Length: 318
View (cartoon, rainbow, N blue to C red):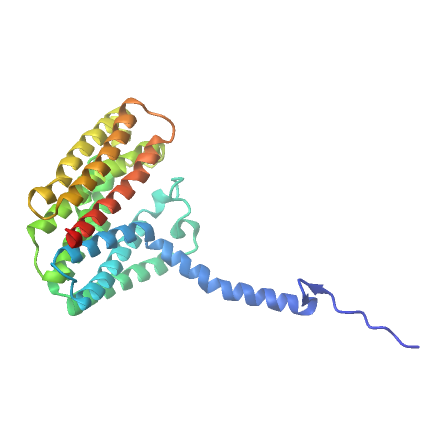
């Protein structure tokens, strides 16, 4: 009598006997990717991208033609590494309050996907690598300025200002406004008055940009005792400040044209972009509606990228 063998059970075409092995291989293969993504998120990639973009524009605006390739490449790498380090240190310091806020409760240190020791080691390695790159492959001025920017954001702002005063984002905005100056210094080895105008644009842009977000998230900030302006002075006062700073921002963005740094193409773009920002700020103050603070916040990011793009295009076309 012949016994018929039963065909092996298959799962999605894979023999059942091998399914567990295959699943384990998939999980093992996915683990490094997931780990990488957690370290990536620790660096606040979207924030760092905007920082690096303005630094690169500063490099191109610093010279009539194309910046020296070595300064462009190594300057970008060094500034990126230090910006990522500052972002990681910010999350390390803020891990307790991040765990209690809806916007930040999914960060790697909060969820436990990265340990405190791992995060500190990672942030330290990034910061040291960035400083070494800038010091030896770019110039010492850029290295020192970038290091001061890191200390200003991760130390002075995150450790002290953020918890001490409702003007935290105004004073601390100096660190976030530094990248174009860093880019300019990477190429020329100097701090130029034109670079300081770029600094001023971002410095004045920061309060209306961040306060729009703070209006939407005021309850989160109140819950963790962070004295953001809408918490300490109320939403209406903050809306007024957003409107006033937007008007000041429009005036400041005219400076590149006024001093001969840029031409008519930039001026038209700056006024058009500023007009839309002002429209949103007026609506936020006098015709509020659900979702408008986040819409204003989102536009402010597009606005800054567009302003710097206009500066770059005007620099080479006019």
